[in-house]
Image: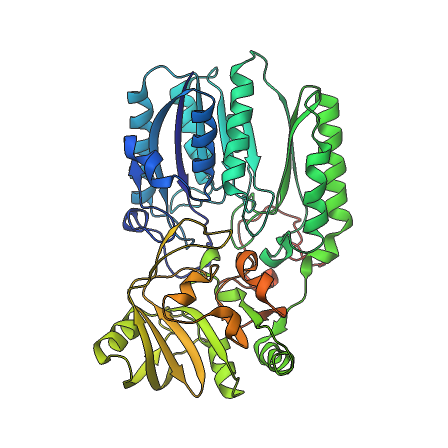
Amino acid sequence: MRIAVGGFQHETNTFAPSKATFEDFERADAWPPLTRGQGMAQVVSGINLPVAGALEYIRDQGHEILPLVWASAPPSAHVTEDAFERIVAMLLEDLKKAGPLDGVYLDLHGAMVTEHLEDGEGAILKRVRDLLGPNVPLAVSLDLHANVTPEMVDLADILEIYRTYPHVDMAATGARAAERLEALLNTEERWHKAFLQLPFLIPLTGGCTFIDPSKSLYEKIPHLIDENQIVSLSFACGFSPADIYHVGASVVAYGKDSARVWKVAEEFRDAVIAREAEFAGDLFAAPDAVRKAREISAVASRPVVLADTQDNPGAGGNGDTTGLLKELVAQHAEKAVVGVLCDPASAAGAHDAGVGADIRLSLGGKSGWPGVTPLEGTFKVLALSDGKTVGTGPFYKGANIDLGKTALLEISGVKVIVGSRKIQAADQSMFRTVGIEPSSMGILALKSSVHFRADFQPIAEKVLVAASPGPNPVDYESLAYRRVRPGIRLMPGSSRTS
C-alpha cells in the first residue's frame, strides 16, 4: 500500500520569552533540521523519534513510503505565523505530489500554539483532511504532553500517545500508530471514539512515569486494550503552561463497540481523578534544594541531581536563568556542576580567552525573565568544546546533539557548562563534551524537568526538584491564564479554578 509519512512538531509555552521562527525549524539541535523528500527517512533513521518508528514499521511490512516534510523546533513561545504557514504549505504540497494514497501517518506533538491559531495540530489536520477527503485513513502520534482537542479527535482516525515520561517510547509510539493505520487499511470499518478531558492541570513533574501516580496509571493501559473491543487507549497529561481553551489532560479511546469504548475511557478518567492530589509532587525552593543536596552529597557515593525545572528548555525556558547556580555558589557547594546554561556570548568569550584563562563575565540572565539577573564574576576557563556529540542515553539515543560553542567554567569551586544553543540536559554525553564524567560529581544541577531521569536517575543517589525563577513555573496559579475553559483547577487539589 502507498502510505505518506510526515511530521511537524512543536511544544508551545505561551508564557515563554522567545517565539519559534522558521529558522528555528531549519536549525538542528538534538533532533534533525527541517527535511523533506527522499532524504527524510535517512535523516531520522535510528533516532528515538515517532517518525523513525513509523517508517521502520511501514518499511518492514513491505508498503511503499511516500516521505513528506518533517520539522521540529525546541519548545518556546508561539510558533510564528510565517513558520507555521510555510511548513504546512510544504506538507500539503508534498501530499499533492504523492498522488493517490492508501493512508497517511503524521508525527505531531499536540501542544502547538501559533501567533494566529490556538490549536495548531487541529488546523494541520483540517487542511490535510480537506485534501485527502473523508475516506483515506489518517493516523497520528502525539506527545504525552499533548493538549488534545475535539478537532484532533474528530479529524484523525486514530491518535496514539506516548506512555512514558521521560519519553523513551517515542519511536515505539510511532510504530504503534503505523500498526493501527495498517489495521484500518485492511478493513472498511472505522473505530468508535471516546474523548474525555480532565478537570485539573497536571504539573510537568507530576507526569513522570518513573514515579506514582503516573507510573501505575500508565502501567494499566496495555492491560485495558483488547483487540476484540478496545483497540487503543491513551492518556495525555497535557502541557499546562499554554493559555488556550483546551489546555490540559485527557483520555482518548478507540474500539469496535461504542458503549465499551466509553466505559473504559470513563473508568480510566475516574482512576486519574481519584489520584489527583498525588500529581502535585514534592518541590524544594532553591536554597532548601541546595542545602539538602549538600547534606546528602557529603555522605553519598553517587551524585545528587537537582532538577532546575522552572528553566527547562524542554518546556519553553531559554536555559539561561541563574537562580540555582547562584545558590550553589552562595552555599559553597562542592563537586557541583550546572548544565547546560545557554549563553552564546559567554561561550564565545571563553573560546577567545582560551583554556586556563580567568575572564570577567556577566553570565546568563539575558532572556529578561522577571527576577532573573546575570551572575557577575570572574570565571576560570577549564575546558572548551565544539558542543557536538551523539546521544547515548535512552531519550536522546542516536541523536546528533549540537550545543554550539561550549565551555566549562568555574567560579568559587562550582562548575558550569555554558553552551550556545538551548537544550535540556537530558543526556550524559553533553557533560562529556567538556570532560565531565557525571557519575564522578557530587551535585548535578540540570536544566530539565523529567527527561533527564532516563539517563541520570540510574547514577543518582537522590533526585530533588528545585524551584528557581523561570518561565516554566510548577505552580500554575502564578500564571495569568485568560483563555482556559471555565472550571479547570489550576493545580491538582486546588480550589482555584480558571
